[in-house]
Image 1 (cartoon, rainbow, N blue to C red):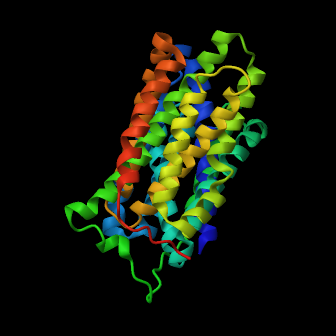
Image 2: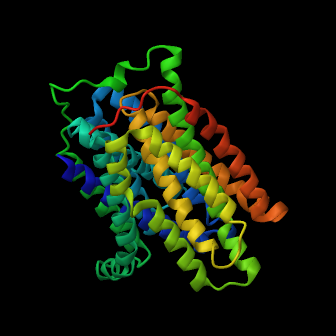
Length: 377
């Protein structure tokens, strides 16, 4: 039953990319270029709130129904963005992007549904498939934005409405795909993560995993948010910036199946340790301009991947799934806001020191853990 989960995640990402890009242009035209970032901020905050809501719905309705509700809220949000594009009050756009964030949260949390839909030895691989497929949607969505403007014009609508119509169609298709999601636990397999962490000492690995996910995302966003400022300061063109961003995105997602295999083979803790080591290494390498900078961004992307999937594998079946996802997106907004300012104060050396301190603060206790790592062999 992985196909509907993977398909829904890919479609939702395509919808979010299209709506996010076009909402920036719409606000720039109708209000002011200085306010163009507000719709995406609303989307980020909606994702953070949506993650908590999806977690609440999961506890009461079950995983599959919760995802469908999340995608349904996303449909409403996409419809509001279309209304704004055809002339409705611009305030609806912010509400629409916030509600689209709930659909985005459902897409992100669907990796846990994928894990629960397969046998235990393949659960991390199933989660990695969802993360990898989400990239396909995010990469494919932008290619349909220009044609969608022609489709909107053919319908007698403003060309600006095209990408929002594309987003509405994509998130509605995600909802249809989600209607086929069936999460069934194999009856003959235990679920150790649901009862393994009852005591304070047993909660420690879960809290460490949550910290790894949060710190991995915080460091990644902080370092990447400064890249455009850094390249502009050095006089590099947009072509080189595009190569850097592509290398980073490739590192974030392309090797997800390999990460899933590592986790299924060796367990989450070695993967999280590797993620923090790479996070530390890439933070140091970003202080080196020139030929090493772009490879450092690739390593930073893969470090995030290891931290994100390794932590997710440890959190599977715990109450922290949605809380950590919500924290990640809330922190993203804070990191994106403060990183360029920190760069102006001390450049990448300052960002690197802060990132290294954060990574080491979790790497040391994670390495010192004496609990046995049970691999799925």
